[in-house]
Length: 131
Image 1 (cartoon, rainbow, N blue to C red):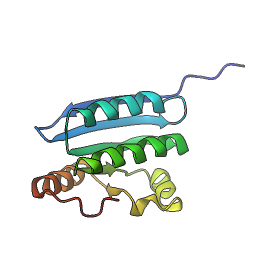
Image 2 (image 1 turned 30 degrees about the vertical axis):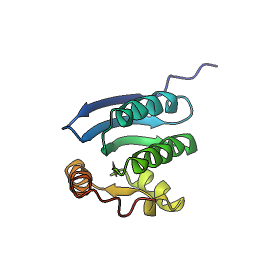
Image 3 (image 1 turned 45 degrees about the horizontal axis):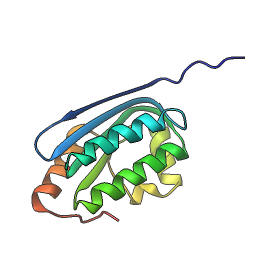
Image 4 (image 1 turned 90 degrees about the vertical axis):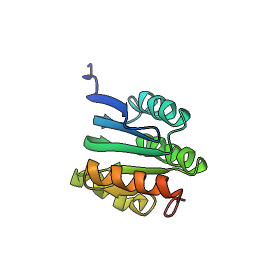
């Protein structure tokens, strides 16, 4: 029996000198998490203090994917930066609620709102709400 490869797409772009956007679609789990982690770490290593992860197209995320997000949050916070997630899929949002990570992450319903949150916070140099 063979399994189909997981659906996973990741795009990223620098929005300005301080803000980076990563858009993820499909499934974030044990087999796709390494690429996700690597791209996130590359973006953070460039010194970006505002990171937006658009997960509106994510259909599934497991504990490995959540671990990647927590590690990214820790790294951004160490740089006095801000990380925001875009989560609009009710099933994915429910996972954040069940694990109580909805109080750890800054979760916005739209990309524009998430971008505004990290840009306001990085411009003010605030890390309020970050662990």
